[in-house]
Length: 362
Ligand code: COI
Image (cartoon, rainbow, N blue to C red; front, side, top):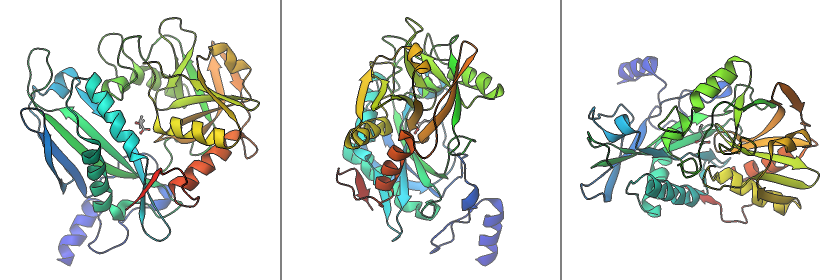
């Protein structure tokens, strides 16, 4: 048995039975996939109902080459995180919000959806089964990815006859290679992320890669900007090429005095759970938080800029480059961004009392 475990350990990181932690270099986590032991799988019946899901060992899944997800991109996803408390319990953050958003995304993408309770139960089971992969307090979190795909075969363009809901997880820390250092963002003018009447506001997988019709060329723009040394790209609205939308991987906020503004979600912007939480925390701290149209010109007047997202957290932006001109922003301990971030993370990790009912302890 020991020989078998040692062999397994050489093949991949491994969670030994009854060990509190998996064999991971916790000090060097980034946002790369670390495969964990279990995933959760639930298939729909032919009438699109989700009834019984279960945990299985993490591994490849089998798909028909004609699967709707492979051919027509019928897929939506969510992202959430589990944190380990000092007493060893796990904390999950605002899971109901992810469950509701997945239902909204499913409706837009012509997919049947799970109930809120089914979604929450699946995420809870995945977190618990992979508990030894949740980093020690202060070293990161377990990123959990619920995914709903059209797994049935179609030839002509049509909704899939069958769907698969999967939940997998990976321990993570900082999303950007910059770590917690300020980001340098590039305003993308050639490519649009989302169009009016399109599906940019839902968490469809096709919003994140070169996709059909007018929607996105996110990977292309992102790769180009990264090769020029930028952290990420900021999109403008596709009608006027003038108003801020979102960054490829997160939402954006600008700060001017005590006013904190973020683009209103009007169908082309993802309604981030972190975005929503930061707005509420900012108001609790006495700031005026606004969701509105933000013309790109306001970037030159902002004191501070930051990004929010489940993967990204709350990340300071040091500079934004627009039309060849680099604008720089205040960063550091005296700014708004770390204040909001420490409150958010404090609630998420159980160090600040949760008076909002955002936390579920498992
Ligand atoms: C998340 O923050 O959970 C996302 O879905 C963004 C993704 C690019 C990692």
